[in-house]
Image (cartoon, rainbow, N blue to C red):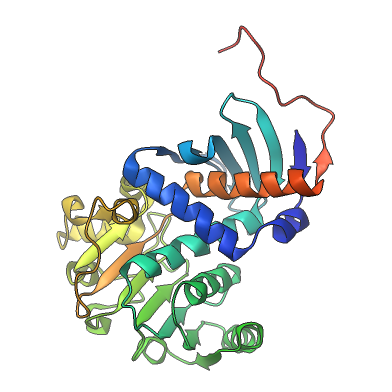
Length: 324
């Protein structure tokens, strides 16, 4: 059993690895070979213990992520298991989570955005926003990004750093309207409790990614927005029914029903139809799935093993007979 640090994970796996791994997990979900253990929470005062996991048959792997939030800081841990139950690795998992969350949005872009989409409107400039933008850039023909943040300084820094890294035009703007005006793809990565995207913002042909509402208190799109989406998908319906603030508010308001919400995995597996025309409006609402961590964690472990990376722990990861 080995231990991988954040630096190990960062050096071992890239966004391209994440895009491949998460696509495998999502496609397996559509085929019935990937399963998610949805996020559960236990509170202690202001703190919340968060646990989620997943099994990916194509990678013969199971995994579990655990972390505590509520103090203004968090530390993410991930445990990777082989198909015989052996624990192969313990990893620090902040970078793993950044990469897999962004990758899912990139995959939704590959599957649902127009082929000629070249402008991205990004709402949010925090640490998760970077991988959202990176995954979409690597999954499409984006040539221009406009980014809005509640902090103009953060938006400016994001624009400067991202444009230097990817040789793109990245413009910091001072309003949501300015960020999304003319955008072919719109991404929100925030913790907002109040809708950011209103019905008046909807434009035919646009692909929307609402990536920050994995909390029933959060909502990034007004209920009326979702009723105007032609193809609406999420990552896991069981998870969405518990903590998908954006979807929960729309269902409660009666603007959509759960039967109108599809799964991105079904689109990837060919079991559901995605975009059928350039004028259709599409949306992916992400909450995060443990199978994504599992798939990318397996890639990190295999690369670490091949490169002799990581610390071998003085404990056995093997299973014990007679226990169940």
